[in-house]
Amino acid sequence: MVMEDMELERLSAAMDGELDDERLPRLLGGCRHDPVLQESWYAFHLIGETLRDPQLPPVHLHARVAQALKDEPTVLVPGKSSLGSVPLDGVTQRRWLAMAAAIAVVVLTTALLRPGLPAANPVIAQKEPSAPALIENGVSDKDIQTFVALHRQGSPLSEFQTVDYTPQTIAQR
Amino acid sequence: MKAFGKGIVSIISLLVCGVGQAGTESVSDPLALLSQLSHAAHDQSYSGTYVVQRGSEIESSRIVHTHIHGEELTRIEVLDGRPREIIRDSKETRCYYPIQHKIRIEKGYTRRLFPALIEVPYEQYLRFYEVSRVGMNRVAGRECQRILLRARDRQRFDHEFCADANTDLILKAVTYDQHHEPLETLLFTEVSEGDSASPELLKSTYPESNQWKKVFFPPPVADHLSYQWSIPALPSGFGQVLQMSIQSSAVPGAPFEHLVFSDGLSSFSIFIKPLQGEGFHPVHAQLQSSALSYYSGTVGQHRIVVVGEMPQEVVTAIGQSMTITEETH
Image 1 (cartoon, rainbow over the protein chains, first blue to last red):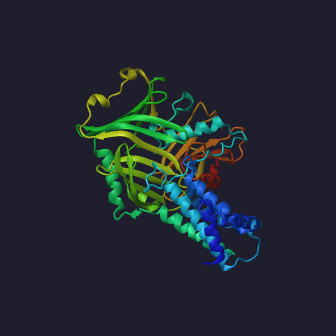
Image 2 (tube, chains in turn orange, red; image 1 turned 90 degrees about the vertical axis):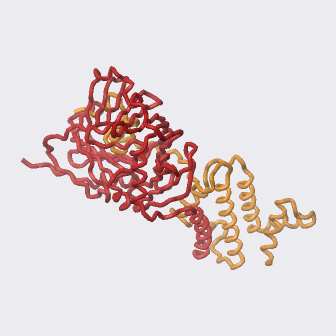
Image 3 (tube, one colour; image 1 turned 90 degrees about the horizontal axis):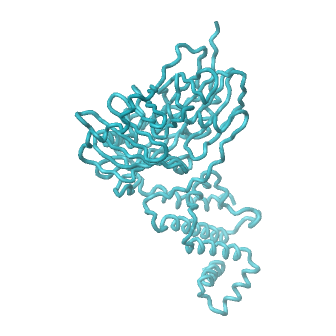
């Protein structure tokens, strides 16, 4: 086991309260000076909080991760501010890969195994409020509503009960 | 560094995709499956309560569907908001608006009524949607098979149905946006199949409606239009199902044309209205709490409005591509 992996293991043990009193101060001291250990500390806390939080808001992170991958995969690559432009050696790459995999597993399993959610169902992200309709250049909200109502009256796929029946929108010859 | 980044992305992608596709099963005979869904909705007798949800809008309705003397009959009573009642027989669909004392009568025009959402020709669905089974679910206390119709292009939305494991009746239907977030959901909260309903349950509860004003739909097409239109960006698979000339008190001015296009699961409307001094610049918007997208612009001396259950960029492209040629005398 390489040194970095041992430190990560000690970090994990410290967070679980299983690191002995002798090694704990040394590890914390290392954290103060080692930015990589600091990153790991933050990542482990994130994982722990995600697993423990029973009131996890319905943000459905895995759907967001999937969308982020689709739209802009690079958002998941650490930025220059944390790693700079220095090429990473093999050990550091392995550590980041392991952390990324761990975070992904936790995010996915947390989302899928949440009580009350059938595991066979895909988790559908809550629809966030859309931007309000653009109202400008002589097109009013009422204007839009009128054409929406007319569309629902004419579309063979609109549920009949959603067809507006206000006097203004019942089309007449 | 780039390869390293791809490595991380690949790991997460594999995990995400692996879960996302879990339980997906291709359908060996999708035509037969779609036929089963359609026949289950038309041939069986059933009654129940279902809910329509669009964003924050929720409305529930009571449905009774049966056959009497070989005629398919449906009655729907809207339970929330202003009262409405819909009665369909083999000849027409009548919608009763008791507050206004009006009846809207649709003849020669088939509007879908949940759960009869799949209609012939079934081949049209397969050209533009990929059909697969994606596991089981439970709706209205019943086990149901989830069936996904995934759009083969980005010009339409995905749809999912959950069909009763025993009767094939659609218990739930969901329309998803491009990010696979639900835009519109219809689902039974309770349903029972079986014996034919009493004829009394299929009659209107408004016997005095004979005196109400009747509005026939669709209204006729204008005898002669002074222009011709074309839509170069018409998405494949969408055919025109309706054209009518309408005048609405909510839209001042001369009568205007309303065109409706559909691919069987999605639809959009185009409105062409002669401008009478007013000016409009292009406006497009994804409508809040709705699967609808909206575009408004001008072509020559006409205002163009496109509204439909489609991605915003498709609706905008349709509107921006339109051309109108005035007839010369």
